[in-house]
Length: 358
Picture 1 (cartoon, helix red, strand yellow):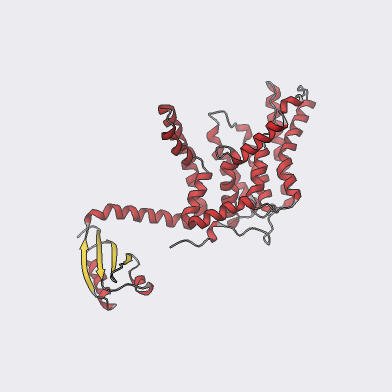
Picture 2 (cartoon, helix red, strand yellow):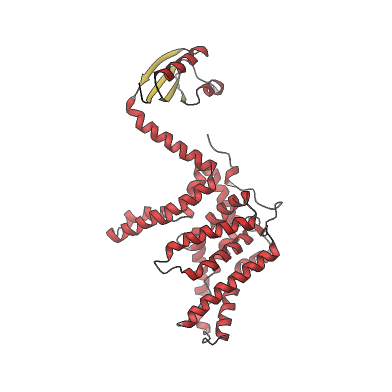
């Protein structure tokens, strides 16, 4: 026999963990009737004879040996999935980034194509949900490496709210303050001052803020569990927090580039994306791993922005980017390479530490 064949080998009596360890390449199924079945792909007759000899040497009674060539392809598929699962558990950070780009870029493109071709909500909705990466990617990877327990650990980062009032102030008001500073400077440079009504009513601002907190298609909810709740802790295991967040900033920026054709992102935003990644990473670390705080901070980012006309709009965007970069540099100078992380306070809710179900 020159190819693998699927075999089911039945022996008398159940196999305990010690005996099962002698057949680690085969699946062990203890039957209700008191017997056990060893199943899996066996390379050739020599390998089969080796297994049968091992059964005899262990004092087990052989009942039957059955070959089933029809199960080869399915079993190979199972082995492939097991390999993917093993690699995901071994390299969860890399798996998350790869899946994020596959889902958001690849599946996202397919979603747009299906919608344009069919205008069908039932056909498009499942693809849309799958393409909502990094959120969808982090939930899938967490499920693979730790099941329900890992997902709950991740979601608990949204419930870390005892962080001190000053971090609520930072999360709620830092980015709006940078926006107001931008508007102030552009007006000093000659742009017409926006009216109070340009900012919208308090109720509309509050509504927009709440919607951004919960909308999985918008930046805060779409991104924060993945970038901050999962990727940042994994990168910080290998690198200093500052280096980890700079690496994350590059990857986040590349992820945003897909939005350029639609006009939702522009090349001028790149320095601001890097700077904001540093700012979010600083708040995440300083609050002991609170994704809730970075979610709130992210949700406030566009609320007070007003548009200008022509060259004034271009200058305003340039000034805003510059202010973000300067703010991030100031944070790095004062927070240092640890970027606010205090090891004694850092949350150990890391999905890698969750027991992997057998």
